[in-house]
Image (tube, rainbow, N blue to C red; front, top):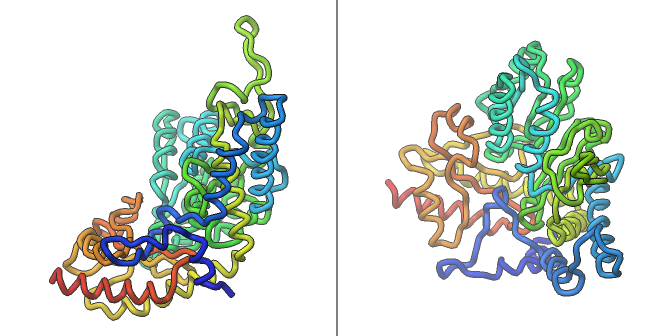
Length: 406
């Protein structure tokens, strides 16, 4: 059982006041706050361990390299990947998706090929594929959703008849919290020969992820949504696929031999895709963040957030004219809603003086908002550090804001 008071004591920022009120941070889906263990990991590296990795015979460089590669092994273990070489450090999930698009995509997607996306994708899992499709004269097809915010099974099966080369989908919707049955979708896509990329940004912070069990070809996530630092992320890819893919960025570290006369040969995995000096402290701290989550217990975190989400929906349902966007049976702790006659931005603006931080707008998912015919939503998203008392404050704050706006 998760102890919210103990968890909160590990997050210094939660002691802040905003606008004279205790900070109530309900924007986890945009970026998670950081526990002391993660903050101290970066501080320790910068104060006592900094040196460039893989490039020095001196002891400090070797110690930094050991810590950096230990973090890679932590990610491998956390995702249950078969090989540590399958874990590629990136600048974030967006960077990871672009890597796959520009490396695998440029060699595999041809004119007339189909790339299959879903209506609920974050822009980061849409725009790179649109750029690739335009360059390669391929086309994008979209799996639609039902009114509950779940993927339409019949439409998915129909779109698979188009024989897509790639299916890219979210494990969990960032805008609605819908948990997709990605194992079932992956099996169906691979049965017709498609490769599958899963955006796991909203899954890794809330549940156990086993990439071998999912059998997906690629899986990506960002550190900053996972209680870790910004500017660091992960691409998991099956080893044989990554080995077949050409480098994307060139520079130091990703090379074997460089010759102006004879050309250049490239390093093996994972370094082939890690040109330049990496975000060393970020990788180390992300490893600490994953260990922190494991120590708390992923099941406990997920159960706690689900309870918070259920309570929020129960209380907010009493607000006159309030409508939830995304009512799937399986959800994470994300509550997304609109209020008739009230703009989401105005609700968020009035919650801010009460110290309540929510996200308003399209949440980098304009195609989803277009489907519902709305400009955006108010989104409250919960993390391990949130409490039922904060849910009560959210409900009271929304009721007050709506009264002021009508």
